[in-house]
Length: 72
Image (tube, rainbow, N blue to C red; front, side, top):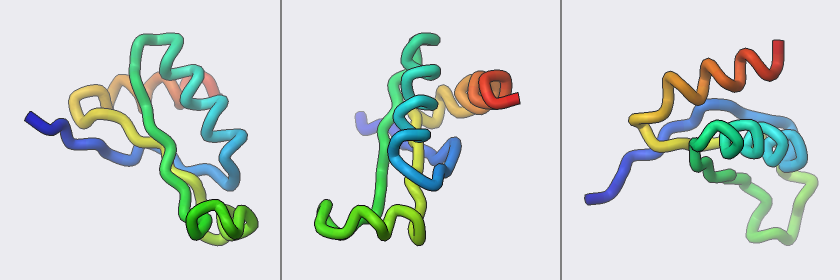
């Protein structure tokens, strides 16, 4: 059974997304990072498209709470 992933946050760059991903991982939540940089050829396009942090739908509420606490 495939799990549905949802976007819980968007960032200007991959570094900030990796930091947030680390916060979630430390709380036992696996996350994925999705970016639109044309296959790595144009990393500057991350700024135009953003970098998204995704988690399993079942962890969405907890992930949002953790991210809010870490960034407040």
